Amino acid sequence: METTGFTENQLMVREAVSQICAKFPNTYWQEHDQDGTDPKDFHAALAADGWLGVALPEAYGGAGLGISEATIMMQTIAESGAGMAGAQAIHANVYATQPLAKFGTKEQLEETIPKIISGQWRTCFGVTEPDAGLNTLSLATAAKKQDDDTYSITGQKIWITCAQVATKMILLARTKAAHEAPKPSQALSLFCIDIDKSNPGLEIKRIKKMGGRAVDANEVFFDDYRVPATTLIGKEGQGFKIILDGMNAERCLLAGEALGLGYAALAKAAGYARERKVFNRPIGMNQGIAHPLADAYMNLEAAKLATYHAARLYDASTTDSSIRQDAVGIAANSAKYLAAEAAFKACERAILSHGGMGYAAEYDVERWFRECMVPRIAPVSREMILNYIGEKVLELPRSY
Image: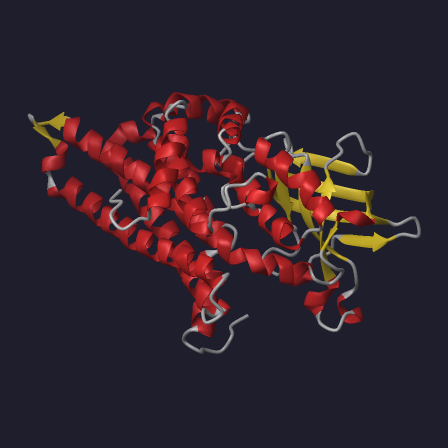
């Protein structure tokens, strides 16, 4: 990837994280993908050098850097060959902690943030539900206040990454019925809860999935699962507003991860096209191979510009009130869309450039192709981004 124009901090992050990733070759990720085992050594290596706190406050042991630096870290991880599995192994620790760091109490921060940065604790993000999907305001998992200063949580979450290995969950739950709140969005609250697998009120079931198999994805069931009232982040009814505050950051991180995946696949395909000879000449001499790869590169570069523009806007908006949040949202959603599509194109063409060998696990491109569907689907689908741009930018009637 061309790095001209990146800041000194971004290049420092890229170099340092690359050195860690170099200790985990593609064979490491192949084995963990095939076995479905958590890359805990990789997580520990990043934690040992403090990178899990890249965008967390220095007061609690973080680096105090911005989403621009976090994004290039996530891209570097995926680009190293780790793919989405490597990035997703730490994604929640980078992203899901942002609402806690901004809205949590001093006691919550002092207890939780240093242990996540050190790698002692891992976290997951509990929002998605099977019957709500992208309609977050309709989620049904309820947290009911009890007389003993606890909340009783009952409901179901799905596609919760790293729940098997996490100690904490940032949970969005309903504390009021929608009709009881001034607005439906004010019926939801955010919690930072313990994941106690010995508690009969909690059940976690792993989902078998297409890609990123090294990192677990789960259904989580709550049945009168009790948590202290002190686990509430902010105030009751602020949960939706709090997570909205961090959604643009997650779009940037996902875009970076998609870029890394695309660049990794493209580099592998170009290397193969230079070395593989058919009819006594490298297949890369054929425009049928060269042109699709060149096109994929330009798509990645364009998506890269959109991604780091969005990340810069997000960081600048924290101190510059003239930057509107809707402008950040448009940039972040556009970046996520463009990066996901560019990654898909690069991964598909990497498979095709390898021919039959693209189907073989040892060449890695099949693994990356399986993983490249993630940024197209999560955390928001391509179609919903198109809806968002149509409504917010083009001022077209809302279609849903």
